[in-house]
Length: 361
Ligand SMILES: C[S@@+](CC[C@H](N)C(=O)[O-])C[C@H]1O[C@@H](n2cnc3c(N)ncnc32)[C@H](O)[C@@H]1O
Image 1 (tube, rainbow, N blue to C red):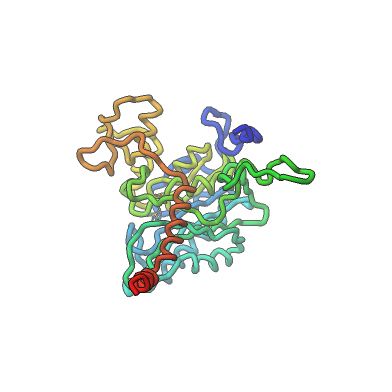
Image 2 (tube, rainbow, N blue to C red):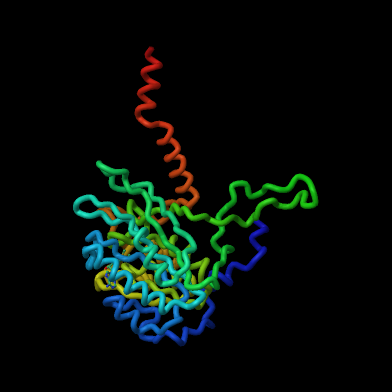
C-alpha cells in the first residue's frame, strides 16, 4: 500500500541495529534490563521518583493461582495500594500506568471485578483515568450459578494531563479503507484515514492458553500483544517500562523487542529463570525453549531447516514443533467473537423451541 510511506514507523518502533540509544541515567545499572528476583517493593524503593515512562502490569488476582495470592480482600487492596503508590512516585509526569486485572471469586462465590476497587485507589493518588479497556476472551470455565466470565479489564491512567499518546503505530485496518469523497471540494480524496483507525477500547487478543505459541508454565501469563499496543502508544525507543509483577517476563520481552529499557520484579525464582530464557532467545543445554514462539524465532532467524532436534516445554510428547502454523490477527478474533455473540443472542433456546413448536402446528 503506497499510503504506508506517509510517515516513518521506525521512530515509534525503533531499529534493532541502532546502538546509539544510551541507557537512562536515573535508573541504577544493577536493576536496568534485569528482572529483580524478590518482592517488588524492595525493587521499587531503589528507583528514584520521576524515572519511568510506563508501568504495565498484571498483579496477582488474589485467587490462589500463584505464590502470595490469597489474602483477605482488605489486606490485598492495602498491599496493592502500597505498590501503586510507589509506581505513581517513580512514574514521570508524562507517564502512563496500565493495570490489567480480572475478577476475584471467594470460596463462597462472591464475585468481585477487581477494577471496581482499583479505580478509587488510583484516583486517590490523583491519577487521571484515560480508558477502561475490556479484554474479551471467547473461552473459559462454564459457570453454573452465574454468567460465565468472558472479559478482563485493563485500566489506563496517566500521572498528568501532559501525557504521551501516539496513535500512528497502533492503528488497525478500516472496514472500508478505500472509501473516497464522491462530491465537493474533496472529491476523489480518501474520506477516512487509509492507514487505519483507532483500535478502540475493546481488545480481542487471544489469551495465553489453548495452543498459544507464547504459552509457558505460568498459569496467568498475558499475551505480548496487549503490552505491545500499550507500549507503542505511550513510549518511544529508549524509554523505560516497569512491571512490578513480571511473571515470566512478557513485559520485558516486548520492551526489548521495541528498543525500550525495562525494570521489574518477580518473587518466584522459577518464573525469573523462564523470563531470562525468553529474553536470551536461546535454547537450554538440552535444546529446549520455554515456549513455541522463542523456538520458532530462533529457527527462523538462523534459517534452520530441520527443527526436530529442538523442543519447547509445553510440547505434547511425540510431536514435532509446528513451525509455520497460522496465527490469526486480533481483527479475526474480534469478528469471530462478535459473530458468535450475535448468533447466540438470536438463538436463545426458548426461541428455538417456539420456532419448532409453531412449525409442528
Ligand atoms: C498475574 S502474574 C503476572 C504474569 C505476567 N504478566 C506474565 O505475562 O508472565 C503475577 C505475578 O506476580 C508475582 N508476585 C506475587 N507477589 C509478588 C511480589 N510481592 N513481588 C513480585 N512479584 C510478585 C507472582 O509470582 C506472579 O508471577
